Image (cartoon, rainbow, N blue to C red; front, side, top):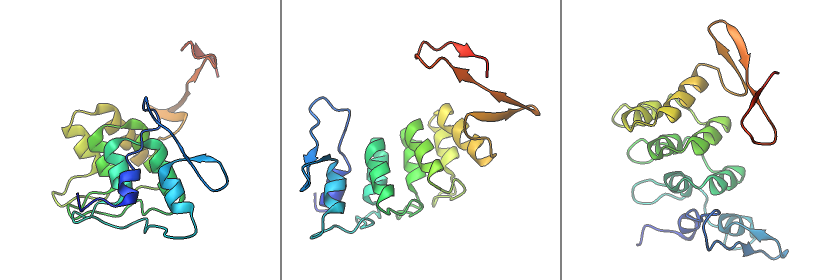
Length: 173
């Protein structure tokens, strides 16, 4: 496909995949393919280069739910609120994919949840239409200022602390 650049193909890297293998960089460290491409001194790709639809490597990684790649792209300067020709941002794409982890990372990194696409839909609207209630709730909590381990609930602060061994038992704060 002529729309694909090396960076967009690298943004499909699935760290949790069965046959995943890191690339070894010049310092002999295992790194993600996007890190290898963007951290080298020569022939470095343009991080926000767009396809014909206006999609970037970040939007493509969000459509695939590649949380590690998204983090690497944001660390290296990818534009988080850049819109494609349909007006969608990375947050719109992650919300449409239903990926809570990706949406949370994007919100923590400054994604604007108030940007509308060309159909005047917010990321929360897309998640709601796709029946991703956990994503809809996360975006709503963030927009309301209730984000993190402590959340407001009917005028009082509720802090939930779970057992650090992973058994799921709620502990007193």
